Length: 102
Image 1 (tube, one colour):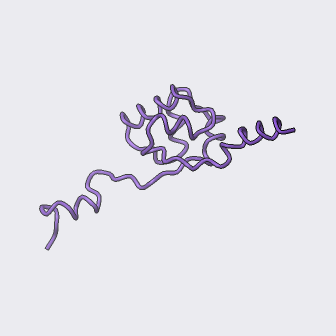
Image 2 (cartoon, rainbow, N blue to C red):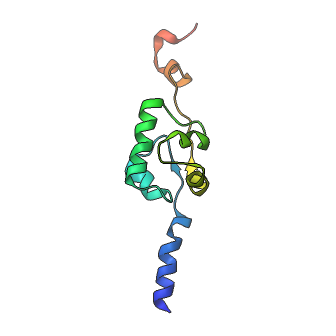
Image 3 (tube, rainbow, N blue to C red):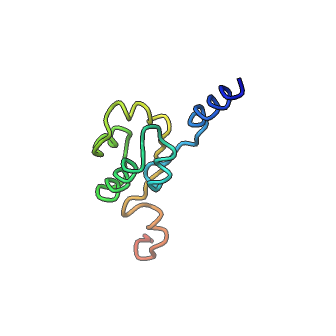
């Protein structure tokens, strides 16, 4: 009985995992946080993000090679999107005196 309980506890660990910011996390964090995403897929996610910019929606992640609708269905509840800082955002305007208006 103790063995069954221990196995159930290990299997349910992902239920209590913290959501991961897909636009900020490194490959190791992504692979540990998302179901069915191993180190290779996580590295592909980071590489795609580096080459194409931040993901705007979960649907955008399907553009990564090896990730399809079934994988998205498994991971979408564990993904968050923090506000990305595009070029010319309000924060950079505040810190760049040349961009201030009088």
